[in-house]
Amino acid sequence: MSMAKEFSKGIIKDQPVLRLLLGLCPALGVTGTATNGFGMGMAATFVLLCASIVISLLRSVIPKSVRVPCFIVIIATFVTIVDMTMNAFLPELHDALGIFIPLIVVNCLILGRAEAFFSRNPLHTSIADALGMGAGFALALTILGAIREILGAGTIFGVVITPEAFEPFGVFATPPGAFIGLGFMLAGMNYISKKLKLD
Image (tube, rainbow, N blue to C red; front, top):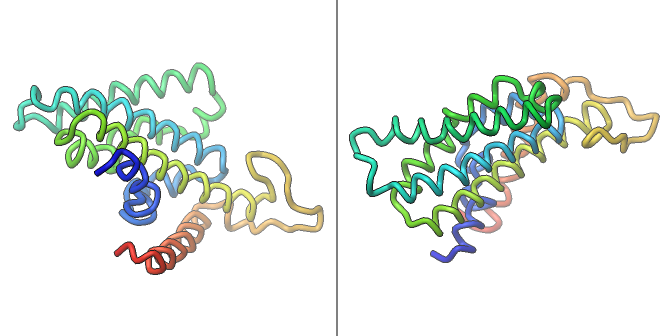
């Protein structure tokens, strides 16, 4: 499979949130705004990319009997880097994402790709896969955050875009709003999948 196909499959065909239903915990927990969704998506993409490089390079060295603990240590290292960097340079975003940053360590998307792909493929295809999956994850979280922010507050990335007469739908600013928004996105993705015959 070419690098372009490896990358693009994470956007539509194997979209992590909307097709594989991976990483739903942060998708539902931090997408109150588009900024939070984008921030979490970028953090996860960084961890995916760095983990893909290290795991792919060490795949022939790591013993099979301890591969999962090794993957967790590698992933945790990069999550710690992300956590400390965001705390230093983006403290407001760091506070908004809270516990969900450390929980990237056990994100099923990242652990799943480490086990199923990075540990079995060469560096260049692992990087393409990581970037594609990360981009798909970030895209889904940003769109869900944008939907919730627009309908729940009338803003997007903190900028007011609705007329003064607009009355926000308060439910979208609450946890149930995440489920409602994700449900509509899943329905839309199912429709697109049937039209493109992805199944």
